[in-house]
Image 1 (cartoon, helix red, strand yellow):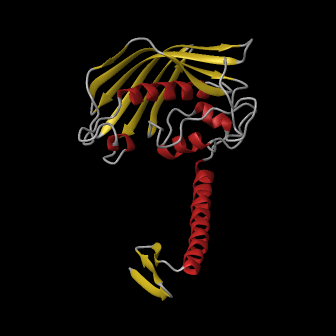
Image 2 (spheres, one colour):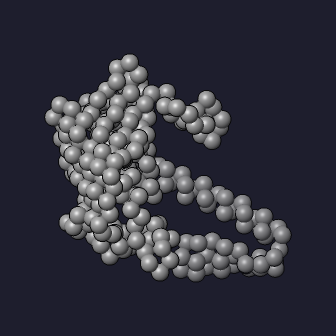
Image 3 (cartoon, one colour):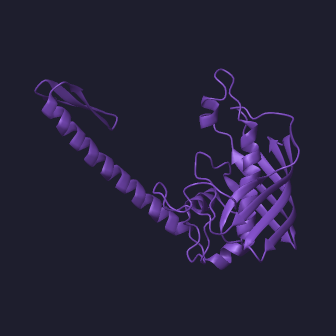
Amino acid sequence: MIFTTTFVCGFFVLTNNCFSYRGHDANAVILFQIIKGIAYRVTVGAANRKQSANEEKTMIPYRQFLHKQSFSFEEVLAFSRGSLVSDPPDGFEARLPAPPFLMIDRIVELESKGSKGKIVAEQDVRLDAWYFQCHFTADPVQPGCLGVDAIWQLLGFFCVWRGALGTGRALGCGEVLFNGQIRPFNKTVRYEIDVRRYSHLKDSGASVVVGDGRVYVDDALIYTVGQAKTGIFTGIAYPDYPARSKNSAGGIM
């Protein structure tokens, strides 16, 4: 759809729902910025209302969260925004990274046996993924470090699922081996983690999990990550970003 109207020394154009001004009249430029601002607020408001409605549909009680053994994309996304649990306890602050850094589309299996457990999750490979645009020019490949980060993300989620309260941080890993790569026309990445040890440190309130991860693409094993470690810590969240506060600079956890 193309709509055009003239205005002194220029004209407004609406093309495929994109509004623009072509010209050099100063008053028209000001009017255009006002109209553009109103349109932006209307669009953002509608998007926020839609997001809120979707989040309300995915909300679950905390008790149910602790007993679920799989999570859909909508639930994983809601967790990254802090809106999955309808009645979070005090200290329920941990989040998965939000897109585009969220490396998980769904968690298909969670298992806990004492201090051990198992995690299986998947990510769909997208042709237009942000990292294919820059890593590398004329040679797109998903950075291997993102596969390692996905293991950390899942271990942090496991801690919260086990009842840990606080904010998550990656704590390192042992040997990492890359035996393959993820390219734009692959289909599915699968993460499998054997949780070796989950522990809650009562004195500090922190929780730590250690696991061995494997990354598959279309069922072929391409990465192994040994002794990956993630912790959940209290008192380090920085919810008032970008304002300065006691946690606006780094420090010991």
